[in-house]
Image (spheres, rainbow, N blue to C red):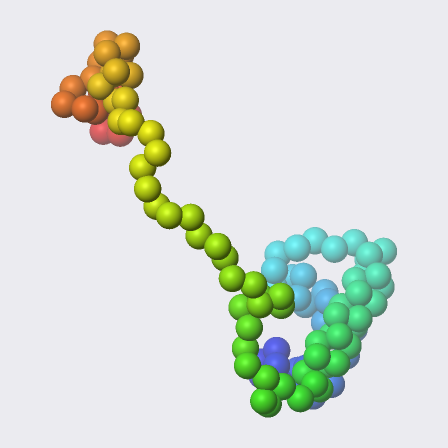
Length: 105
C-alpha cells in the first residue's frame, strides 16, 4: 500500500503509526512529543486531502506559482585573463597550473 493509497483511504494518524514511522526512520521521539506530532501530521494530511479534492483536470502545470520567467544575462567575458600575472607570484606553477602536494596515494 502506497502513501497515496493511505491518503485516499482516509487513514488517520495515530500514536502507533507515528511510533512505527519513527522506528523505520531511526528517529527517537519522546512519548511526551507523540501527541503533538500526531496532531501536526493530522493537519498536514487534512491539507493534502483538501488539495487532492480540487479539480485540476483542465489546469496546465506550472513550474512556479507566479509564472515568472528568469531574465538571463548575456554570457560574455568582462575581465581579462590575468592567470599568467597571478602565477608569477607563485613559486609552484607550471604550464598554467598550480602545483600542489600530492594528497591521495
